[in-house]
Structure formats: structure tokens, C-alpha cells
Length: 409
Image (cartoon, rainbow, N blue to C red; front, side, top):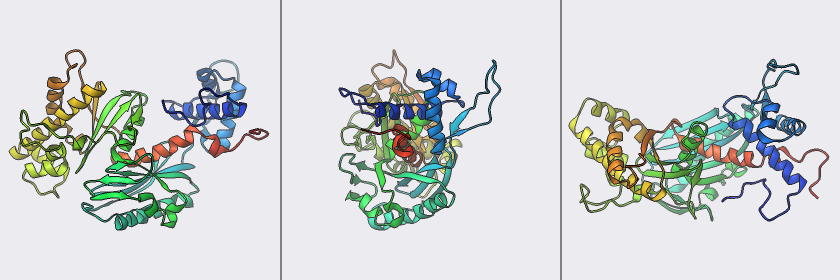
């Protein structure tokens, strides 16, 4: 199990300061994750901490502009009115960025989950050179960060979603096949720009970050475990277990677009999933130019255009075959369709579900549900920002500073 920042390590004595840091994060997390505003008394009841302790923790979070108070609510019993607590808005934010095959984007998100600023620029980055593309991304990030600074918003950090293998141990982008990039020092290139030098980005796979945004949306209503599949020109995937992204040893898990379909059944020609269900592949088999929008493809399928319907049926079946294999391995009961698959869900879902029914060995006893992503457009940018904010929530003491009158000795 991954060790959470700010919590005492197993096998080591917990110092008093460690407990205070842990409790500070505990109080902040309760406020951020609550479905409705909590009072200090609510937090004390939920955590088992004394009201005096909670009050001191909350006062520190308010002073650091991480938490805000609403107008007091009259108490149902005798006593002082309860003061509802909410995540502060427009005070602290993180910036999520994305390089995808057909767009660049930057989005700033605050602790309350609000998008404070964003910019998305379409383009065609197949077979591109990393340097010029990352220069363009930095040029997009500059105005976003400038707007935050002008509005008095503190930037916690940045994250960058990439459509490929990002080494979580050593940092470089190892390969992004659809971009044509290999062994690129993305952080080095971006931090050559002054706007990002002070906030170097954390790198992660775009599907993993999109799945993080999806898990965040579903944290109260569930399901907390699912396979997320993101359809674009390439196809990414992520495994979410109990709300956490399973990234694998190097951060390379979820590359389902590169799974080769077998030589049996309707897939005699072989090839990877992307050759059947990637955006370009679908449009090619529908007899449409690759510049065709997803909305136009949906419109053609809605009126029963034969080639469009057939291309989507083929893609849905291939997707279902691969997802059935993933479900058989990881044992989850939910599949979430993201990216273009969310828009195409009405034409894909039946075919995906049929393959899951046929090929998941446990299906007779535990049906696999197919759902549509809820995290909205450009979820990888949101997920990137959330991944940075999560570091703050894990260890708010690093941001808030030491409690007055305490020492770490």
C-alpha cells in the first residue's frame, strides 16, 4: 500500500508534530469530500477528535486560505449557531495541461473544483517534433498562470497529461506512438520557459489522469472500482480500484489500445485495438475523412447510414473483446466509456455489452455494467490539476507551515 504523506510510518514512533500534521490533513479532507458543508462539531464527530482540536485545525486552514466559512446556521438545540465550512474558492489552484494528438490544453482548477481559467488549441500533432509543440504549450500556459497571479490565486503546481508511456520512476516520456515521440525530456524542455520554471510539471499518462477525474466525480456515489477506457485517435485505459489509480510498477498500466486482437472469430486480420476502435480507424471504416467531427459521425449513425453504423458496430465489438480480457484479469464489475466513446456510447454500448456477456467468465453471476464518463470535457487536464491538489491535501502542513509555538525537535 502506498504511504500517504504526512502520516506516521509503520514501525516508527509518531511524534506529536506528525500527529498534528496528519490531523490537519484529516480535517481538510473531510471538508473537501463532504457532500454538504460541515461544521466543526461535524468534523469532531466524524474523526473522534476533540472540538477544541478541530477548532484549532480549522482556524489554521482558514488562515491559509484553504477553507472558508459560510454564514452561521441557527442551531436546533440551545447553543451557538453552527458555522458551515467549505473549500476556499479562487485562492489556491493547480494547473493541468495536456498534449494530445489533435489539441493542446491548459486548465486551472481550485480546491472547490471550479475551473478558474483554461485555454484549448486544436492542431494535428501526429509525427510532430517535441520542442515546437511544447513551446506552444508553454505559450498557452503563460496567460493562464498570469490570470491566476493577477487575481491573487496561489499556484500549488502543474501537471501534464501525455498520450503515452511516462516513466513514474525516472520521469521522461518513454514513447508516445501517435505523436511519434520517444525518450523525450519533457520537463527539461518545458522548464526552459520562465512561466513553468518555478512550477515544473508532474508527468502522467492522459488516461490515468482522466480516470482520476472520473474517480473524483464518483467518490460519493460510486462505483469506486472500474475500468476506464478513453477513446481518441489513440486508445488509453486505466484501472481504478477503491478510488485509486493502479498505475503499475513504472506507471505504464492501462495501454489497452495496443492490445493485439487474436486471429479467431471476426478479427482474422489481427491488429491492435486502435486499428479497430481508434477515432481514425472508425472514420476510415465509415468511409469518412479523418477531419470529420464526432458529432457528424453520430448524426450519420443516428439516421442509419450503413457505413457509419457498421464502423461503430465493429469498433464496439472489438472494444468489448479487449475489455472482457481486462475484466477477467482485474475482477471489476463496471466499465466507463470516456473520450469520444462517451459521445458514441449510444452506438457502442450494446456491442460492448454483448462481448462482455459472452466473454467474461464470471458474467453469469456478476454482470458487468457499462457506463458513460461523467467528468466532462478534457478530463485529463482536470485530473492533472487534481493530482497536484491531492499532494496539498495529503500534507497541508507543508503549505500552511508549522503551528505557532511548536517545534519539530
